[in-house]
Image 1 (cartoon, protein in one colour):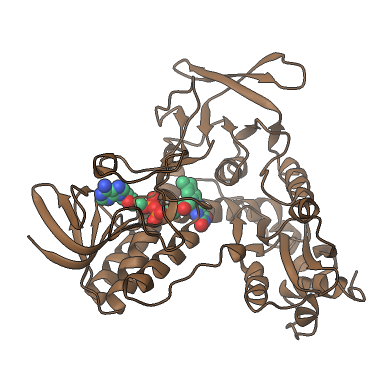
Image 2 (image 1 turned 30 degrees about the vertical axis):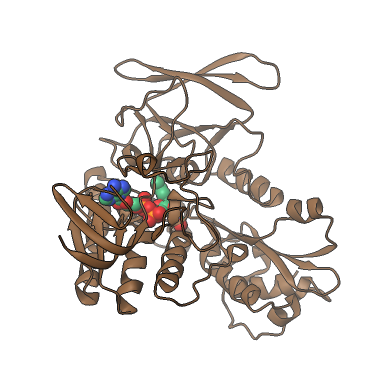
Length: 462
Ligand SMILES: Cc1cc2nc3c(=O)[nH]c(=O)nc-3n(C[C@H](O)[C@H](O)[C@H](O)COP(=O)(O)OP(=O)(O)OC[C@H]3O[C@@H](n4cnc5c(N)ncnc54)[C@H](O)[C@@H]3O)c2cc1C
């Protein structure tokens, strides 16, 4: 029986980051991972492969839409789908091997196999039993489906199947207008697939600032995606060549049907805790299946912690990573902390969409007096030069104190721009602090400064 200070179950962004930090803090650490490769959902079937395909399909879009405008002429390239998938797989391989390298470098042991916790302080993997002073559950999540919809990962797929389709389909119905559905829908729309998004609610990306969400839908519509909103999917049937999605429109209860070669079910994800033996151990769970933890990531069992998608909070890789670092610090007797008010969220379409902090709707609900500083990328020279002037930066600040309460960006590199505002928020900055900071010209970042100026006496280039 091997003995460790810490055993982490799950080698995704929550688990592997936690393990590396534990090792850096001098703790003897092992990670149990059942997949063939490290990196979890994120590196294998999530963030990284989806961004590879978003990048490749965006390049195709640039060739077709913008090259001629810049005087770059010639035959238009076509897609070799198998090569594009091989590129995506290569990106996955480089990243997952990178984690293996980091484990070796930091002396973290990878115990290959599926783990369970038969009793407090013990982890079983196959026939082996290991002991640890602390155990961290970082087992992540899996796609969830709808009643009446049977996933086969060939014609009726989750994001996992959508990342490895046999060919680029002629048509696709995406059920669910959340981040994953819109990103994968964008990939295929750019590759020439006719994409229809069917969503139960009356808006896309419902947790987003409503103005951004409306603007985003308009832009995706211009790019060729069709939206059916307020539609309750009743079921999906299939023949050899097509799938039929039946749904009811909420406004008049009318029954409708739409067919497509592929149906992507993107209705969210649920925590994955199968096979851990948590109920026998008496671990308390939340109503929606997450592992219950206190503010310090501790479960009700002594020495057993949980982080990432398996607990409550946004299902994001960077949230899992931050929790991984925080719990490592706590186990090592330090003060780990995650500021849940400043967790950015990003949609990696073109243009990108990014947000942090409160939306206008949140502030109205709270009854908080606020001001809005907004700046369109139409006034940003760099964005115009690269055909990406669609979108805007919107900063929300307290009406009295000018403290930044939230920011919402739709536009080029929004996923990078948002971090300037995250840092400002961590430091309790005012919009004026951003407005007084010199920003290099010509950059997309100037739009952030202009939005901050618009919270005060006004933007210059508006
Ligand atoms: C298509 C897609 C795109 C996404 N894009 C983004 C994005 O752009 N940005 C972002 O922030 N998030 C994104 N996400 C979400 C992100 O992937 C997750 O939030 C993140 O991976 C959660 O990390 P985790 O460590 O909690 O769990 P996971 O990454 O799910 O890792 C858990 C690991 O635990 C292993 N495991 C489970 N049970 C056991 C067991 N009993 N024994 C051994 N091993 C076990 C699993 O095999 C898995 O490898 C995306 C997700 C998907 C599906």
